[in-house]
Length: 566
Image 1 (tube, one colour):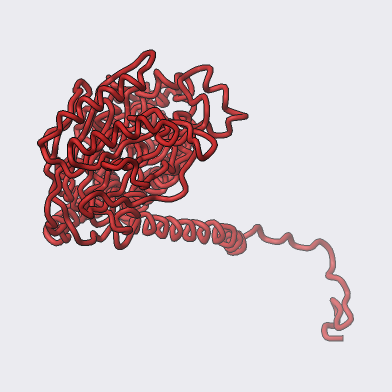
Image 2 (image 1 turned 180 degrees about the vertical axis):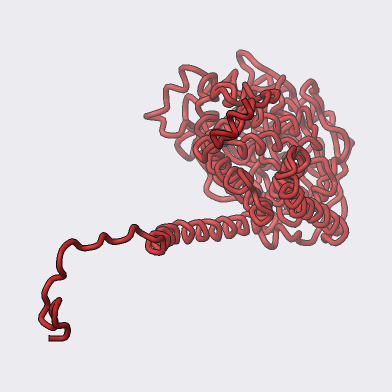
């Protein structure tokens, strides 16, 4: 056979290599789709309740390796979309009992935001990747991820719940980075870390000598990226300004626990009154109740206002309640933080500005109102407040209240800090999701807001988890779990000074947008140059020789075949 092959001038055909493990699954469109969904879901393990924060540093690697192995850019974009679907379902899976199939629909729509990111992964890391493209990937892929987080952070798309950087809420070096560039900076560095590790794994698994040298070259920028992440973290740890001590404040948190059924508003109020009376003699400077702690408009129910004012006199402190009721002075239902002192409501009131989609209002209700028939979507839209409010409690301390969902938005706590708030307060309730990951996820966000602003933050809930964090984002005292029905006091160290994040704002997002703008410009130039290069190559290529004319040459005005020149 070899001799016959040589005589024909051909080569002996190679036997096909044995398929690698998992190759069959990758070859199947459905198998690859399942892998993409699973790969996208992995980062959810880094968030509470599992809180495997270290897993975030490698959780994106399978997703990146899958997208870069796609045969086409369209397939990589599909991997990005399905991975985004898996991520959104995994991080928000606790919504399934409330929204049912609508959760999957929302996740599928938001997952589309990752389709361009999947395409970018293949564009920069797929095929015969070069060191230059690898170095670009270390900057572009984090920028693309930040763009996704920015877009989905819009309130109407669900808000900034599950930002990758928020998985590091209990890691002290990460909290130092948060004070410089907010949660956005940590998200970007985590993606850079995952990208570098994915490239190193690719280099380590190179099999043939023909690919080992290029793969080794790819390890240089990847290693440089990992070193850069470590250097940035170390620099932040050493040089980032720390909040300066500015006294202490004692805050009491009242958590009544789960109270359901008929007359729950009255029963909850009675329980909160009993717990608050137990604070007498403990000298709190402020008492904080959770979201929807009062189900009556205080202007319409002066008897309730008098009862709370009496409690304020008993404990010797103002009480911040949260009223969830139809207003008597305005149409509609509002969720409002109301400060009540010994003489009754002080006049300080904050109406919640950013509402939970489907939970507190239904976007485009005329089109999507059917969501109320398949889940626990809002039967009536809540009304929005118009502006944030900084309140002054007895003693002159300024506090900035937020309501529930709003503690996920970095810009809101930053604005309150710039307006002079010395203490941030979040009144929340996750009673619909008691046995899920939601209560711990929500409580962890207060640590990030505290570290970003350099201001302590109290996260007070109806049913847990309630928690308090100092100006560095470190926990103060013990949190109140979902099984607790109690009142607890916390001695909170206050701080002053301005963090770089409060001063500079969302600069990592702006830098990411600039990187992507440069990338788009470069891609545009490349596309425009491609036709010009094609034309030049066609004109330079040798064409077939012109055929010799048959017969005598044609007579011209200046010559003839027999007498040239005439």
